[in-house]
Length: 322
Image (tube, rainbow, N blue to C red; front, top):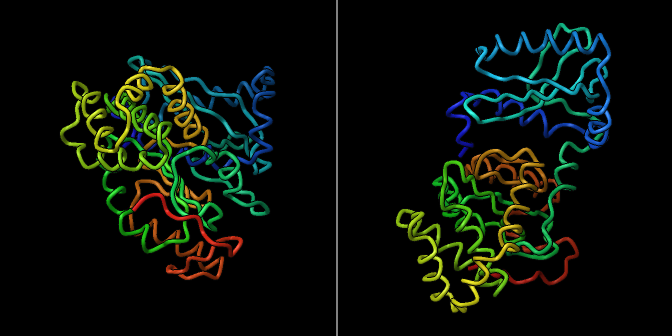
């Protein structure tokens, strides 16, 4: 589910295109952006930013009540184009996305630009940190599926249910869970994420029991009872409720959830669920699309869906989740 700001600002088209554009930038371009941000634009670039703002306002019907800021202009993978970040604010809510504008000022483009000489998903894999995160499946699996999820999101619950059939069908994959609570529209999601993290800290195997309990009881959890429900789930999972309560109130637990959120944002995640299959993004958690990407990865590795072969052909680590 997308951020609440989209409903207010009307930026669904803006962000769905711009976020993808941001993901496609190369590591070299990303590294160049901070330096470019500190340099004043040349007169030609300043004029280009001004004409681009006029075009963008007209394109998205942004009147004077919308505060729009463009820049900096940074190199893109296409030498005749700049990458330009568009920031927009209205009613106290802001969003930003990356687009492309030709250096001659004739073309404004949303979408993806790829360097065909590079792995299009290599940068994503470099940004994904899976160590220390809840996971199940072989430790040296040839395919890693990283899910950014929100416990209050109905679509995430659909993916949770789909994974009950996907997991057994693909025993060679490693599944990693990352919190991405969208607090603007899901008021108890962050608390649930903190609770699940605390369960993981106390007993990594118990994380999945809490994970499943939250999704199975999503309709009866509320902002008013989420603490009580988490402690209930913890008791049923055999956890120490006093330790859980202390962890729930700790700053470290909140920081761990926020670190996952920041990691997702660095990857262009702005909706849940978003899944990365060996770095390849799959938005919305559609079961058919997810299996398409898994099957494609298996074809590249010359494996079949039922294979338990791992990267080293060693004994796979047993699944921690039924």
